[in-house]
Image (tube, rainbow, N blue to C red; front, side, top):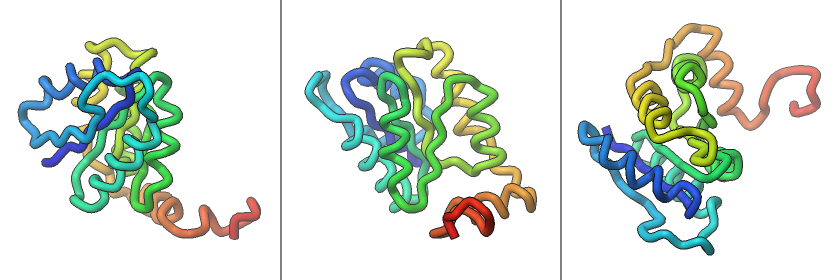
Length: 152
């Protein structure tokens, strides 16, 4: 499986460490390639997401809080990016949401925690249950749902 990975300056160190752990995967590092405090997380969130969708792989994006880069990632059609800071959230993101991009908050997870989260995310399969399929289809549609909220 191809894994696309990217991080801004706050996630750079964690990205570099995680790459060394992903020896069973084809890892494509989309940057930043150097520590640059003037870089911007939206650039890496978008690029990783675009490549993930184009190539059918999985993505990992990292910034300080994980929030900004996950918002950027989710702007790309076909991406379901999940911000995960615990193993259980990563497991559920894959089983229930068929998430294809993982966002990590480098300021709030240790390297050891991040390794477990990444392993869980990459090894957990989508359940395929009807209720989860239905919900993912709603996420992928132009309208978020069919009723009451004003999106339709």
